[in-house]
Length: 124
Image (spheres, rainbow, N blue to C red):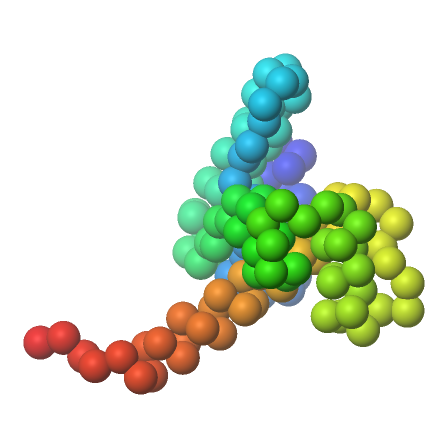
């Protein structure tokens, strides 16, 4: 319930019209996977209820978009986030880096999607 209320508050305050979220990928800890999946479900539900466009990306897609290599390590992703956003220092928390990287991936995908719409012939 708290996730739903907090996210709705953010949506109301900032009038967002798009959001990006990482697709789930877990290979060992099923307990964590279940809790994250539950939270992710709430987030997706609130976004959908508010008519917000959702971009979903795998970790591989995010790394490919930022670094150019889908198997890049955390340090490489952090460096690209820092460089792309012209930050003075790298984000301290991995979750912050991940969120910024997903947002950058979405922004780039959206830009290309808009470009394709302009140049693609209309189907009749």
